[in-house]
Length: 232
Image (tube, rainbow, N blue to C red; front, top):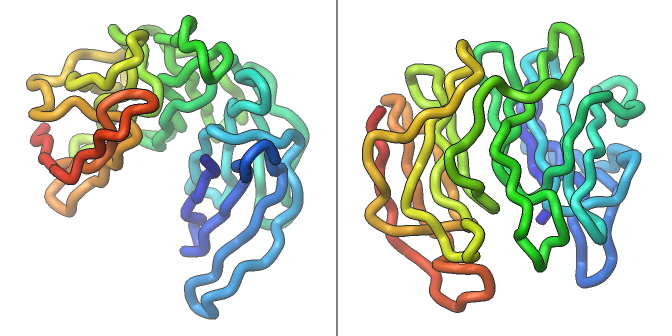
């Protein structure tokens, strides 16, 4: 329930998360050349289920997360200064997904209430613009609230947001597509063969997206080993 974000220099920033009832603000950097972890400071807040996106300029933007309830915390990490003060404009969001495309870091889905009570699922996305370091809500929103979905940037630059938990909370077999040029979402062409949440989505070299793993519902012991490919 922490984040692991690839930096522009190939290292990985690991931040937040929890161990039982202990929630962490600490961050570490993993260097694949030396196979070592080094400390990277403490975030302004201790959270888990937060979202993070690595930016081309080397910074990392963090949004949301939970300690006891979802938070609207938003802050930056830089290689030279570490964690910075808050970025204005964050909205209550935890357990969502995030991606970077066409000059925008987009945060999508999640919940905005207590983690055990998915009564409020934000539909609008939150966009971060690195050029101005500003956050704003997207023009359009998801058609379905999604907690613990997965996202990946497709070859056409659009973002696929797949699965997740709905209000039930059972996993969803639907997917949606975010277009950074318009700031809007639209339904994906086809549904997934398997409804899934807590899963992974990876962009393939040919621009398609491999979706795999995950679970059937919140608290369910049913896990999926299957994978499927979405072709934009």
